[in-house]
Amino acid sequence: MHELGITQNIVAIVSEAANGRKVRRVTLEIGELSGVMADAVAFCFDVVAQGTVLEGAELDIRSIRGRARCSDCGAEFDMTALYTPCACGSRHLERLQGEELNIKTMELEEAA
Image (cartoon, rainbow, N blue to C red; front, top):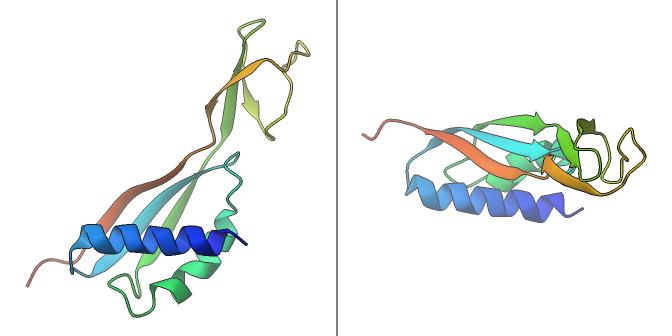
């Protein structure tokens, strides 16, 4: 499960950016085509955050749907899997969204 390593990296990045301040909330964007299971990241988050400035923080995961443009006919459409063909049958596609894995925002407690 590579989501454990991904979650460890997320906690490390946010901890560094928080610069010692307590983190209340972290918002992630995870694309449906990224290969990252959002449920697994959520499952790992509390355990990985223990003993860090993220301990007790709320995790908000926003799913980004897959979207592509066909290079043959120009149609844009939702993708449910990496190899979803266009309605015209073409597999010459430009993926427009859905592969993201972003730390979108973090909410910190007020400085004392």
